[in-house]
Image (cartoon, rainbow, N blue to C red; front, side, top):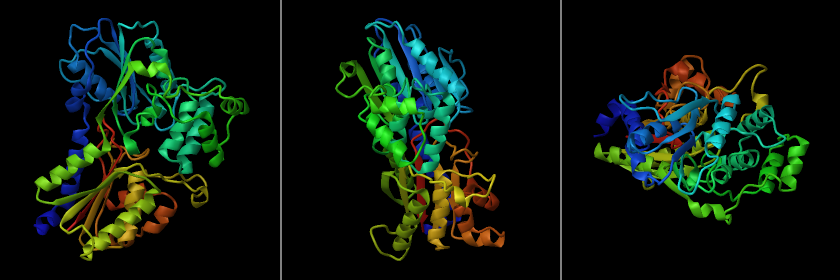
Length: 438
């Protein structure tokens, strides 16, 4: 059996990735999570990398005779082709990710306008997925778009967790942290979300525009101070005195708000595990909320694989080890030459750390990829690792450690032909990692 897996390890790993993504596609899942048709109008708002696909799925599922209109925003290039014969009822806009731009500001303004003047007989359906924090950008009073962009870039390079980043984003926004739901009152709000965050907390997904925010302005200020990120003094004062506080869980508005999780990282990993077992492989899900520095998480996975290959521990080859979560990459400027930029995202940096940790260990192949199809800011979803990854790199004159030091995981795997390229998948349930042990 192991020889069959060994002949086509990359094809098998890619198959597991696609099984995970398939479980999270809106076309197959969203119709099961929709509210009843109201007496009045239904207004749709939404943001995230899956927002375009979610809008199409809602248009297909909603009764043709029932009113439906609204606007959502997704990342540039992430609007899927419209299904044949499907009439457009929801406007799909595009904006920048991970650093917001003016298009994201305009999209947020349109959403706030769309929910004005509603009644209790109307309803709002919010389609929320990962990436919405950057795409739904509407700076708080006293903050410019340029300020917000600088703060976002600094957070992305700092190694801050997704929870820390979103605590800041929610308090520096006029639409996130529950404020969109307040603007829609008295209409009830029904949120359908695809989780891309550890723990599946709706308040963290896309910075929770339609749910209560348990974090505080003091929390946001503490994050900015912890990572030494500059803030305009008037905005800092507004955080200190609570003027930028978000609506909390005890606000009466939440009695009219409902949240449904359409897809989660756990469900996606379970779909991949089911596919592996169907193919005759033992499958183990290590966890769907693994956080930490990408390269270090890669080395930990290497340690688990090495232990199993020695015939120790609970994992018996042939098997596949699956994990998800949201790791971080802390970019250390002194390691980059003048004019040089980091190339590669969380998945490829995990793969590079894994390859170094495995150090050519026989019988281990791996795929690390982002389920939205884009790892960081490059064109790949992630990268493959094989037993000969380091030896092939050395033969081509590439040093894995040097590439890791300068955050060039993309260049390393591109030189080997080991990038995993899918294009946008139109969903997002966070990182996917699979180690095949034979």
